[in-house]
Length: 157
Length: 147
Image (cartoon, rainbow over all chains, first blue to last red; front, top):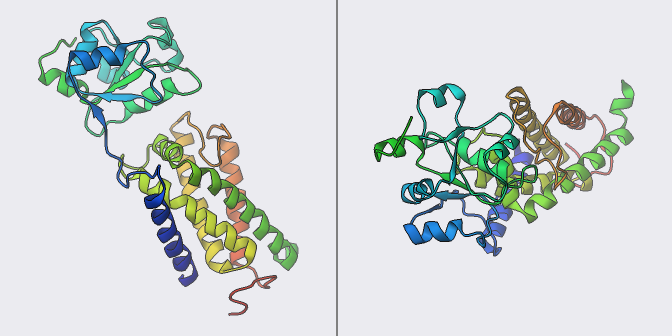
């Protein structure tokens, strides 16, 4: 219908126009920003003085560095996939995320992962953990997930 | 049922829905990042295109709300209102069916979780939109006045 099309067209022009001129405009296509780096980046991310406002995606090297330091890894996939194989020592995400407090405090760093690629379970879980309900302070998402971990030959069980 | 076709009732529905949409749009336009996160939580759209929705949708809500209240392009605005509500109902329905424990994202920081109450609310609003689309008499419509 013509009127609807006009309203949509006007909305289109103003929405994307305003998004372009405003300082905090969004990128049109959300791109993943994965923190890459080595030991020192990992150190600084783990420092208690590092304030995070949202989950941070990390690459394989940083994930391994965290792992070697004993950071808690949470598998965000379902229990069937978890039983078939997971990062050694990682825990299956409980139905109630609050139960993660059995293994760590809100102030401890936590890494979530799933099957990499298009899988967004780990990011959803991370967002939930850092949300108002649970208030975890530092949650990281290992973007490569289990496939990348296995490919690198790191321990699984 | 003639009450539902009464021009004053239709005018009331227009103003009510108009305020709902205006109110819904403001916070989303102010904070598209949060809204983008809300959309992602519904797990319906592929990662990457949620920003397009979070930029565009609030402005459609804004203009639909303004048009309904001002009486400009009421047919088109009511149609879009119905279309958006159908979309919201589908999104909410699948979230409730999957047991997603997520924030609605309907309005600003209302903090309400998706659930049957919000679903029912949207269905009522959809019915209101349909009544406006099917109205027989015009009342305080600036443009177009006839046709």
